Length: 354
Image: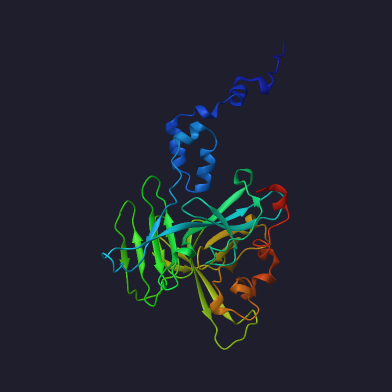
């Protein structure tokens, strides 16, 4: 007599899985999971699942950060502080549509502004966007972030203000905050985890522009960026005496930090990766995530290339193709240019009017 086959959908295992109450997971486990979420957006989504998950998770990191002026006030010999706003790059990826790369800032009061993704120092002039984006309904990747001072806090005579600031939240500890200043003599301010005292390093012998916290350690080198768990450095060599022609204007070399040998090694190719270098936040992404035809290139944003700007370079934004050794205006590369602005047509279809 043949044994009657059971319907897989009626087995105890299948039934119990279908009826699982995820809100009943142990709070200790939920807390451990939340500790593993390094991206703030992932933590927000995790906490939004239900009240049990929210109460068992780490709190959202406090965005209220302050940064000191490098020189003390003449009144009472006190240090003045600026309030910081977090600035982030997000890649929004709808199914079967081209993605959109946006830049937003959130001030200490929680107000969010949409900024032009190709320009820097424009926090007081947000773009008008008559829609509300619900990140919980979209596939969103956070590519990178830094911190800025709202322009209304900077006085006309205040020529010494932070050029770049990074802050890394370390779970339940205080953030690691580092910044460099624009001035004739560069200075660096550093505040370590849980320490209320700022360390200010003045009269730097070299100009430090870019900052990256890699595996808990701060690195301050021009052209530095993290990519797929590796620390990279982009060196730019300008070829003087040539007009803009795409080639021969400059040469770019990319290096990878060898942690074992503690030295920089030549990196022959970025493969599928695309590096974005800016005066503010620098980051990387894969060509497949960006839905572009190829990687192995460096895109300069935030007016980062004005020092090498040719007459056809709008805003100093451009693309360097490492395969061809060729520099091109970003506007001449529609694959990459269309990532930024204007937004794709699907944005108006999936968004809710404000």
